[in-house]
Image 1 (cartoon, rainbow, N blue to C red):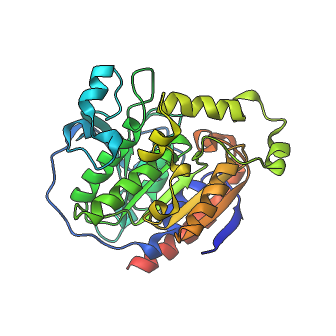
Image 2 (cartoon, rainbow, N blue to C red):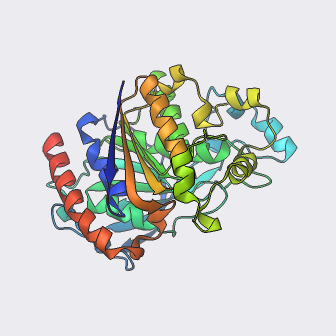
Amino acid sequence: MSIRRWPLIGVIVGCVALAACLVAVLWRGDARGTAAAQPTTSLSGATGATGVHDATGSDASAVTVTNLVVPGPANQVSSSKPSNQDAGAAAASGINRVGSAEVPVRRYDPAPATAATTEPWAVLVWAHGGSFIHGGLDMAEADWAARQFAAAGVRVYSVDYVLASDTVKAPAPANDVAAVASWVARTESAPLLIGGASAGAHLATLAALDRADAALAGDGTAAAALMLEYPTLHRTQRPDAAIARATATLREGLRFDPDRISTMYATHIGEVSDAEAAESELVAGEIAAPRLALLPPTVIVNADIDDLRASGEQFAEQLAVAGVRVLEYTQAGTTHGYLNRPEESAVALASAQQTIDRLVAGARDEVQ
């Protein structure tokens, strides 16, 4: 299977256009019984969002935001993965590899004007980035990005997954995202999207694979599409001279050299052998093709001037070899984490708007 690659311009098209590009492959699942999530706070018309409008004229500041608590993986039956089966041993060692008992989630509901009905055309489980150890629901990559999706008529569940630390290791963060995806798959009737940015894209990939396994076992529906924004998916990236030249003059905080990547993954997965990492599927880019083949159609948006672009490009090739439909974009002129800095480029924001409006309008034509 070939990869379709396009360069893109603008700050936000790498976020909202992901959803619009994939609607042709979406399907509607059946409504199912749910475990109750607990709403804690509701905010309508919250301030601070950039005024981005979708094709219907609704803006990102008009969405309704609700804080929820969703049952986490520590309260659920373990999956078939070896890393999820021995919660007792993990607890005895003082290392949490299972995940949270409860997962904080922020839901973003589209304004009524974004759809002909009160139901969204898709629901998205979204995971922010932060090198597996940083980040939260208030960062722009979580909050601002979710508002743009909601302005396009998508209901978004932004996940405050447990962060890796001395006492929390993989697959606990991915398990939190997967638990939310499982809950959403049971509670929502609209097509399910799973996505994330940077390290969150890695977690989203593992959550989508978990959902595929569950669907094959008769537990809910699989994700209809996977959306990866400037992802990191490999502990060891293949060398790329062109990317090295492009990133050579970046400030240190924007660089991801081999040592930084190695340290990031060592912190995330902890002290495990390569065989254990493979058996437990702790690193998405090291998963074998027959397993990757279970992933849904995938859109990958890489930042242009970014060391991690090599990982996104390599993973696109791996998915294509596995037979997964892949759309791959390079966001022209951007550096890693640009969704956390949407205010930096008003010109790019404006130029991306027309593209987003057209993509959303075309997407709605596909599902109506």
